[in-house]
Image 1 (spheres, one colour):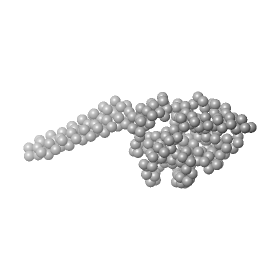
Image 2 (spheres, helix red, strand yellow):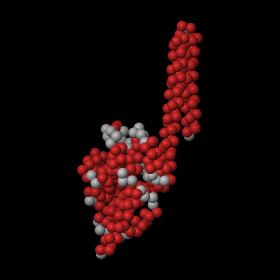
Image 3 (cartoon, one colour):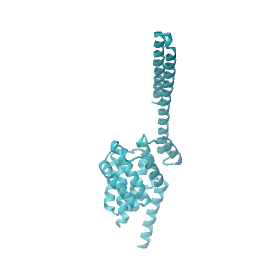
Image 4 (cartoon, one colour):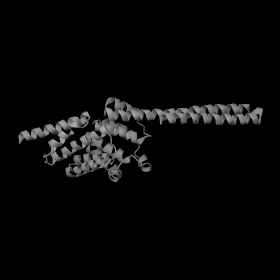
Length: 275
């Protein structure tokens, strides 16, 4: 597709230049006293042709960066190289890419960077452009939960309540919204409600909701298991947690969720030793 775009860009640039040159030729034929005007038309055509080519190359370059980001996410996970590529391709004009980067920071427990990114967006844009609002608010909600900031988590929940609850069953990242709401309910101590939301997220993932790729998919399943275990332990229902966490052993984890998995198993061992 990039080759096609490149050829289309070349043709578009050549066409623009040709049109201006043709106009200049008409002016020359019409009268010799219009030579200066024809030169201006030729120059304008050259400038427009260069701009057209530059825009085409910029689009191809952006697509290449996006492909590199996806390739690294699938093959390596959320590594430093992935974030370098993701930062290079992220743009507030491409809201989905921008928010995807914020989600990845949440998965690594780097909630400060998530908030840093999302604070660059103007929430008023979602009034006219609701696409992405559910991910924006749920990602911000996750970040404040990870930070342990109940006050700001409550404020974000109130602001984004409509978007999150409307699109939590959407095939487009609805499972991430459900996860964010589940984390928030856990923070509030509503463990049973949190479990319901986690089950909803798992159901959406099985139904094929995005992401449906290996490392993001594995990582998401691990995250669900960790929060499910935390809820069950808070309710005193420890049966089956160990087996569930052992099943997570084969899944891809970020260091943040690797530590959470370790801490859950450690707490289970300590509780069993006491009893």
